[in-house]
Length: 448
Image 1 (tube, rainbow, N blue to C red):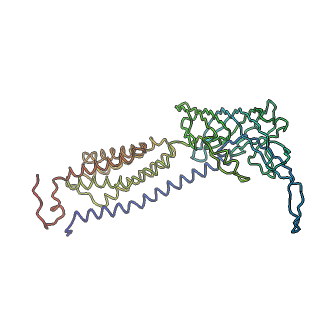
Image 2 (tube, helix red, strand yellow):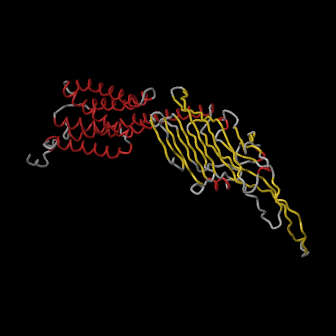
Image 3 (cartoon, rainbow, N blue to C red):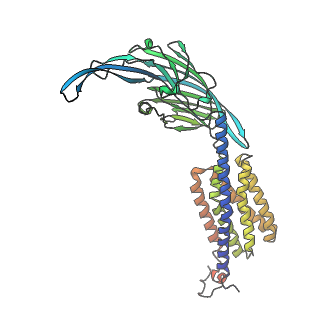
């Protein structure tokens, strides 16, 4: 005969929760695997379409040579001689102003069951350079300019839908890839007549290009004054990078954002000048087109509350078992826990095909219906079965509120636990725990 039935029941329930943590870990592994499969699908689509795009430039790239005379010693004789030295340098000039108006159109590509958002965009930019003459670094040096080029870059050249249209000073220039042997800092360029470079005079330019990409699009603010206006029908933009838009409007019909960044607030020019021959990520701003409702992230967050969900459900059954004198076998606890774990797998599988809210509703209704039917027989009638089903409805509702309100999740979870503890204390305030424990070690206090 069991001398301590309550303690034995608590230990058995604790062991069951440990057992249920195993399938919960397996569900988390499935979520991670499906999330990785989606990333692989996105990579495959980007490989066939184009990846994330970052627009850089244009910048004026002017190679030049400086020739000067220097005095060098002749061995150990104490004598000197003069020699003519020619050194190669590069002068880089950034636009004094660059204004860009961009339009972005999105579409969904499917790779299996995974939707991937891709886009095409048009860009119209105007700006100007002001050439400042190159000064010799050595006394008496002579400067000879090489072939000036206007350089520009995009994140993925495969995304160019047509050749960029460039006009400098009203003259159309052909834009093509720079040769790798030239070790240019940007992959696209156009030759500029050196005669157009006049000290102190503005050199205006116009640039138009069509660009495709996946995931995000961004800009590097290399001009002294940068202005970018972006319009799109995408209703869920996420503004990322080092600078947020100066103004933005977002609605169900799309968004419009305006950035205004100066070289005083950005470090892009200094980073560009010091990057050498190895291009690196430069400071900028971007728009991400990721879906704000990530079903895998939402499901993973739900599983983080799964054990609390099971504990609260088992606690409710245990307290009512004490108060109402219900008899629930450990195997029945295990069945109920298995149904609760299965909810998260159902949620994952359904959310891959339905909107998350509908997937959550379908999975929760399925599990509540199953448990209501099961508890009707376990508890001996529809009334106690519906009572416990109502409790589960409340728990599923609170869990959904926690998932969709990430900023208030801690507060909602704390209030839930406080409410459950208060309900347990009120429901068991008159329980004679000594008699329930089967112990006579002490006399129970008088009841209020």
